[in-house]
Image 1 (tube, helix red, strand yellow):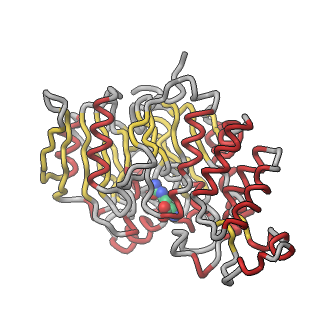
Image 2 (cartoon, helix red, strand yellow):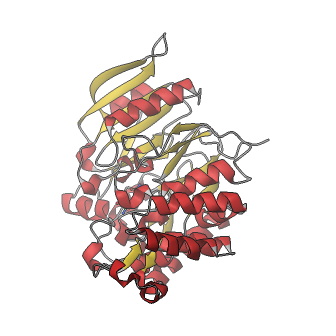
Length: 408
Ligand SMILES: NC(=O)NCCC[C@H](N)C(=O)O
């Protein structure tokens, strides 16, 4: 049987990918709470969906199987017992004040018979005004603040790159940095455990959402079948990378080494893939700020199974030459050589390319300088609009989780 997860590079021809079409969760964004919800503005949902549909159709036109998180999650909880367990866990993690309110919402969700509607509702969040019974049952005192939500939305779900990361035949089911995104990983837990496509494939988990230290998929890059690159960033703790490496080696995923790149903890460089992506055998997009000497920790498995960790100070070219055997590394600078353009286009995810085959990528049309540099380097570009989607600070790589790629 073909494995449902097979990822041995960043550039192998993409065969199956997981997306989430932005839903009502974007209409539960409010200016007062943008910071906690990790958004810089409020997208126009209908236009964001038009843009996202263009993205999905472009992938289908390239014979890539497009799966949606919301469909897999709905199919995973089809069994009544699994549905009940999902609702319990979802409510436990939803930070609901008051037992009555929780019981009311539990009944509302449990009575839903369409699993897709149930999943959509759990993603969108629940406004208190959706629970008119609250007033009737004298629970009005539960509305003790003008905070409008009984359960918060999860607006970052369309960035399917981060809650879990596929590598080899396995999955890193992540512990996310922020409370708002931590809840997103529950869908992955149920999909890999109960969905027919995955449950009998014994998908090895090399990280778990219950871990104490954080890691996000935007920091996890599969540079080859032997080599993983992970960013130490605002979102990913160094300790998590040690745990990930130990699990990867112990579960024989096939990787021989993990390179941890320290990219600092600024939000604009929130993940390694916002400043560095692989677009061809020897071509990489980068942000100028990660050129020059980098601090890299090279992690491999020692004779007795312990981790062997070496600190290195090297340029990216030398690191890629040494560990990937690439002689003529081509670094394609986001924004060209202009610092202002680099800042603008990195902010709008000019470096965050999704590679769909060696030398072929999907990019936002809104970063013309970076796109021109990619074209001049001989990379084939497929453009998608991103005016609304980018307001969540993510690009084509952020909005996709590859499940199957051809080997290179
Ligand atoms: N891999 C990525 O760079 N994902 C982008 C995530 C954007 C989201 N608003 C966040 O802050 O987590």
